[in-house]
Image 1 (cartoon, rainbow, N blue to C red):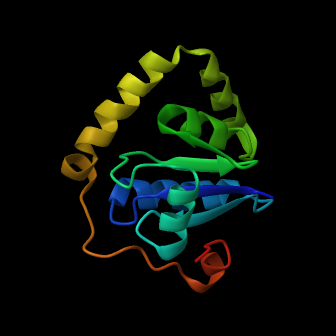
Image 2: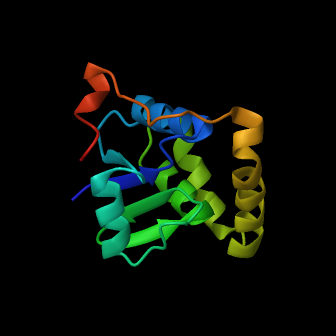
Length: 130
């Protein structure tokens, strides 16, 4: 099974990251679901993830990764230079997550928030599960 990325569907930054990944994932390794969707909620429950979790979540090989670990692991399967960001995994998790949490805490203020989840266009719709 390929990786599944769960994201905050009302976050502008998160939606931009999903579009960024889709453009650089030519092999369509990743599928996506918003954390607010039925499938997103079910996957979070299956992996015992608190619904109030403020993180991107990567589910891969029946394991869930969050915060900076999820972010760097996603890079591993992207095309081009983006693969090198996977080496960020060697940076201590506490430091990576500190930076991640700082951005997450400010993301609505810096990038805005939507009233509803993003609706993918026809070309992207097949990448979303629900």
